[in-house]
Image 1: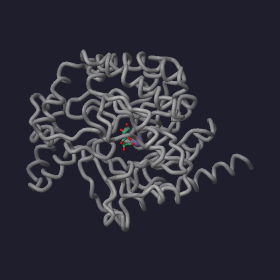
Image 2: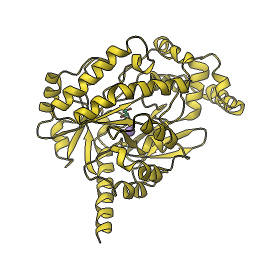
Image 3: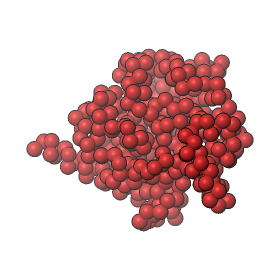
Image 4: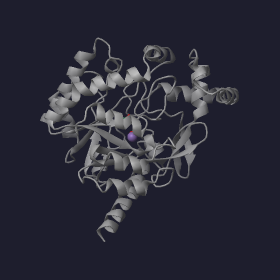
Length: 380
Ligand code: CS2
Ligand code: MN
């Protein structure tokens, strides 16, 4: 494993020279300015490589999967051909690890982005915020049927206690999209966006993922590209939308859909770790030869399907045990400190939630220390 850093391109509040000073071996980036569904041209790919200066482009995170593919609409064949062409173009420019996710409509989801920690803030998903949003702000018909009655009662009380500012904050965080998500919504457009999923069951959605993999993995394999699926965050259904990349069983099924090494996994310990029934060291062991990219981060879980992002070595994921498993595998797997606290001057710099400089640097230093320590122990 080797350390990398996610960089959002020239608009990122952290400059590429700063990234270069962190002693990472590569950069994780994407062409966020290219329209979702369009081909990534070789010129655009080359331009981004130039912007990285001396640093290699280790991983594409992500080429977004268009809703037309996720919903298998009539636009899907054309969108899949575009996706394959983007892969060919990346391979031609020497970029060969590609991350994607298969979450409907939303990407990673947090209801609170400024939860205090010493020296700064972290982000959190509050299950009652989310349920209150679903029941009373989104006003989704039948939402109450999706949840146990006592939880609905708790969320109802919670909503009554929320101030107008709380409600605004939770709505904005749900609708506006966090860094890396390619979409941003107003309440009305969000309602429209989730509408088609009233008629797509989780089983059908899985079939759409299978179709996607059958269409692109052969091209990836031919081109020497390693695809990696990023797990759902949170790893359970949100506002009635199916989530199908959430557990060890899900990942097992996905690996079998197209049994080829090019069909791989991005092991995101923070996303998967939000579920207490996900055993991360066991998953690292189980999928070792299919894990081509790793996100290391930690979460502290709390009741009502809630969690907050914690220090990289403090939280419910046993980071040392996960790292020990991963170090048994290939040495050429990129990892990145996936999110970090907003610390010290990060606020002044207006770094993106989760994608701070000081907070991620702290995580990187801790993880690199752990990696060096474990490597030395296994040698001696
Ligand atoms: C998130 C996402 O956990 C994470 O890494 O910050 O931006 C994630 O990178 C994308 O969903 C991957 O496609
Ligand atoms: Mn991640």
